[in-house]
Length: 186
Image (cartoon, rainbow, N blue to C red; front, side, top):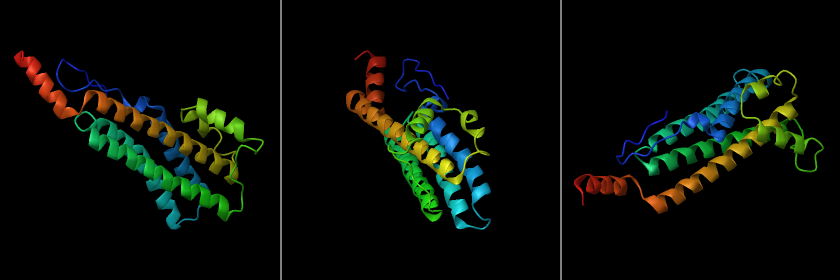
């Protein structure tokens, strides 16, 4: 949700839904739901684990970026929880490849570069949903792993940017004091 800076101490906020790494986690949430329904047996504990990790990745970005209005500490903690959830999801998709004795693609695989480039350029659910019925387990897992890696990289870069902003501008307490002094004409 966009919040305007009216000259006070609260920063103007952008919409978390515009963040590319959030868009990737939204795709991962949908992909994971579809994957578990198609490829995992009902009652398999992995179903719930994967879905909760995907959900946590997405939801903690939303909550964390909004909490940043008043707490950089909470913002960074929650976005890092999102990262941790995606690492858990990554492990699950890697396990799926291992269990099915399938290949985790790397830069020597003939389809690796095209997949990485596609995921880099496409951030909307519709860009992926059209392939769900066509992908094999191997393709599905490798695309998910690529999206996880790219979302993680995006979150890490965002966290570093927030760190730099904090060091340059301070936190809410410094901004509150400065705004109050400015209001009083000090």
